[in-house]
Image (cartoon, rainbow, N blue to C red):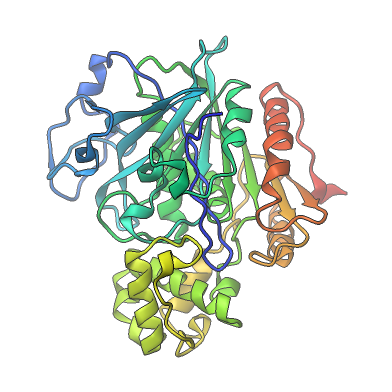
Length: 420
């Protein structure tokens, strides 16, 4: 089986895994023009050109064009073949926008089966990966062609399972991973735009026949991203309606995760504060009010290392990291609350998975998310996986989730546990 990609990272329990799809061939000349709906009004840009194909292994792929080409968010800038065995894997770089509305480049992966597209085209699955780190090199797309010995790989079957049933998998690296710039970790709008724009970009890949169906799946940090993507999609990408959302072990209750009630939560709190600082200048300016000197050292470590278990052997500063509970200090209190996931009902049915032995993202987070979604009138089904921890719950969603998506695509009515 092809190890198309898998970056395993533990950040206070938030894990990452990434897959993606794409294809090759001659580009449509229409991609050389700026799309009519383009709304890029800030940042340095130049006239748009056709997406550029980079040679396999060319490290210049990650050199962001300066200035960025003009265009609409979701425009494909470049693509690069990575691997072809049981599947076909490409890197992509595309236009998106930061929370402030500045045009940015984002990278990701596209993975699809090396078979003819099914009748009606592939179904597109937008994938949100779990946490891999804050540094540029922590992007899953950068690890896609590294030797297997350098990665902890255990989820190749996931992309195989979905591609075997006519899916193209598209996984964003998220803003600030892969290319220069800070990563807005667990900042919902940033994650959502990265996921949705990756889908638009994948649809511009040459010789990749994608049908009208688009679904979302995300694990851990990616579960948070997927919830936000479903919420933002009707306004941000109305031309790409979402049919269903699979949410696995989602980090949904952001203030609770940032409270620092244990050493592992203190570490995660630093991640969250760094993410807010990446998106909001007022948070960057106020970091000193909530981080101890050890916390500031830990943040510097995060900015240069990937969260692969032991940070590559680099010593971790001794806690405490938080000088104050950020849920009680502005601007962090308001920003953390604003990034809680699942606060608005969407037209997209949702299937939640969560292990009842999850200590990284406790089941109580899923309880709160489920109750909130039901109170808003959301159509949602929840499946609690008995005996599963944060990571083992993923094995259940690959098959059950694929079957659920196939049912939704064929017109089956989704189950609504809120009515039971």
